[in-house]
Length: 253
Image 1 (cartoon, rainbow, N blue to C red):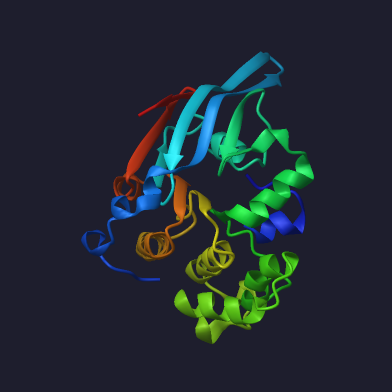
Image 2: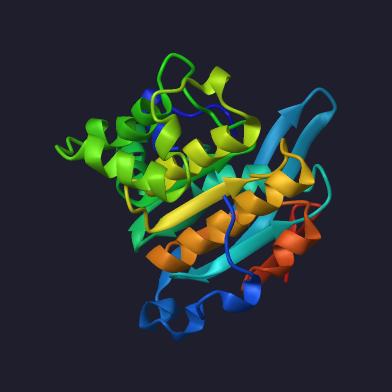
C-alpha cells in the first residue's frame, strides 16, 4: 500500500465521544446510495512456485456515509483489496465503480485525478513528507487541486484534530499519535466522499490508538464520509456499521 503514484497521491493520502454518542449514519438519506462497488474482482500474481490467487471473485457494494471494516488473517488479501478499490493497483479481472465511475476504464492519470477529487487515505506508516511541516503536509493536496484557500482550510482541520499549536512542526518533531492526526487532517481536508484507512492504529500504543479511532469516527460522522478500514482490531471493527471478512482471498460477511 505504499506505492502511491507520485506526490499528489501521497498527499491525497484526538479524543472523542463514546460510541453511544455518535450520530446515527443510517438516518442520512445519502446512506442508501452506493459510493463504492466491486464486481467479480480478482487478483492473481505469479510466484516461483506458480500462480497465486490473492483475491477471488470479490463482489461488494458500500453505501454512502457507511463505516465498513475489512478483517481477516494476515495474508488474506485485505491490503490488496484496499489497493484495488482505491485504484492504486490493477486487478487481474473485474471492475470497481466509485460514485458511478468505472475506475479501470480510466488511465493512470485519470485514476489519480479521481482519487484527488473523491478519496482520502490514512496509512499505518502515516506517509507524511518529512521535509514539510504539519501545515504544509495538509495544504499540499489542496494546492495540487488549485485551491486558493489551502492555508486557511488546512489550519482549520489541523485545529479540529487538536494540532493548532503544532502547525509549524516537522514530522520528526511530532509523536506517532500526532503524526497520525496530521495524516487524518490531510485525508479529510479535501472533503473526500470516501476514505480508506489501512491499519490506522497499527504503529500506535493502545491509548493513542483509541484516541485516533475516536477522531476518525467523529470526522466520519460530521462529514458523512464513507469509511473503509482494514484492521486486526476487533474492537475497532465492532464500531463499524458493517464487517467484511476475507478468508483465503474470498469475501465473507
